[in-house]
Length: 176
Image (cartoon, rainbow, N blue to C red):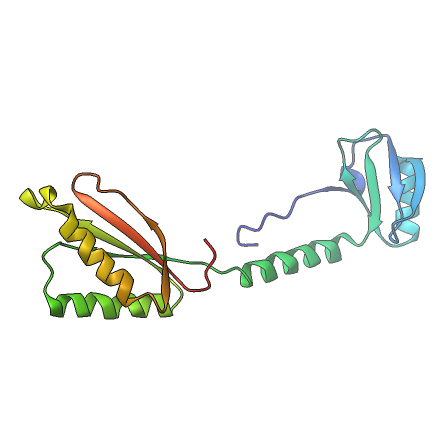
């Protein structure tokens, strides 16, 4: 079922153990039974004998409707995937010498990303002699931080490491 991780358990005739600790559908322990007797009890109750813990001594088996059990597990997995929030990181690349119009375009773009719940990573790239003055790039990043302070908070920044400088902004309310 589309990559779901539902464990395959031994049921009925697939169980290899000779003696099992059998548990009733309501959770009450029936006791240690031989495999044949446990299968007869399961057949009488019109249920499956499912080996839930094959490693224990003796192995534990439960009387249950296996098809219903697998269906419920798949429904739980489906609902947990549906409730999962996926946060993307969008990257905006900058240069220290940015024009005001370009700054506004990048600012509007980052506002759009943040309003959609995505994080924004600003990457300042230095070329040639621009590396000698990282404070110009830092000033541009600070301007972005100030402009977006009402809708986002700084999640991380990097120290100047040669040719680049980065800053990640997360929308307000997103946990780090």
